[in-house]
Length: 149
Image 1: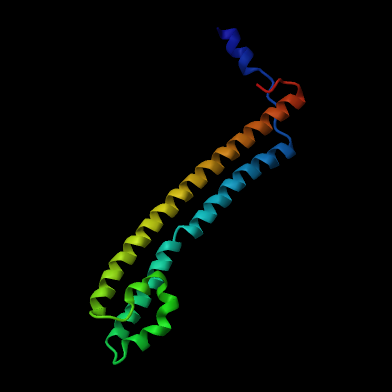
Image 2 (image 1 turned 90 degrees about the vertical axis):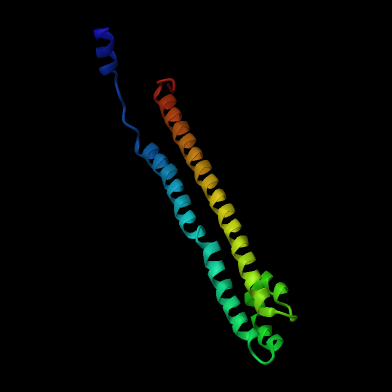
């Protein structure tokens, strides 16, 4: 048993070449870039919700004007899919409040979907980077004649 440990302990260990180290660094670099992308993509639903919230605040102010339909017209582009719910009609303040709740629910769902996709993206890219690293180590071992174990 002691001889085996010594034999394993004294086995020749070769260091990876510069090229192999560069490939492994790239594998981890790609994972880091994926995380960086996730940092920028994750807050997008919140930013969109805040912009829509501001547009709904302006719509609420427009509803109190003398001609609400004319005051809402310039806001159509900023309201997006909320604009259809705020078409001229009775009880505009109540419809704005209902649309505000619906908009928050839509953006909460969008945020959950975005975060789930980003988590899967990071998992897949991490796995691919690990497989790439293992493949590079095996190729280097075969090139040295170790058999790739």
